[in-house]
Length: 126
Image (cartoon, rainbow, N blue to C red):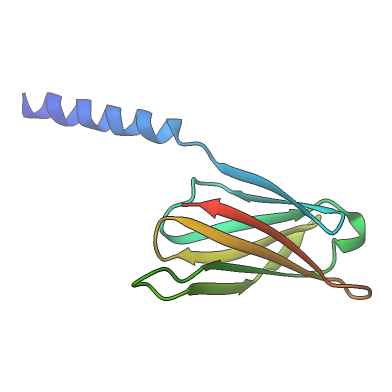
């Protein structure tokens, strides 16, 4: 009976993991579209985010992700910044640690080799 319960539990867990969807969000700013995505749903703790820049003019730019949660009563401001690494075709990877659940403000800072810097603002719910 215990073996049957273990098998049933493992089957239930495997089905729930199959239902978990990857994360994707589109953000626009300064005439540029960026897509933030992750292979796994976002959770508190460490997350790997991919940022895809849709404008060919900015595909070789420096990209930084800045995430923050404003201060609230009894809680200080939380902030993290990560320089994204280019992985090809206008896609950048950044590792972010969301220290708690809630709404996080996200700034995608794009610094092209020449021209004006761009800031795209969005938010994520963890």
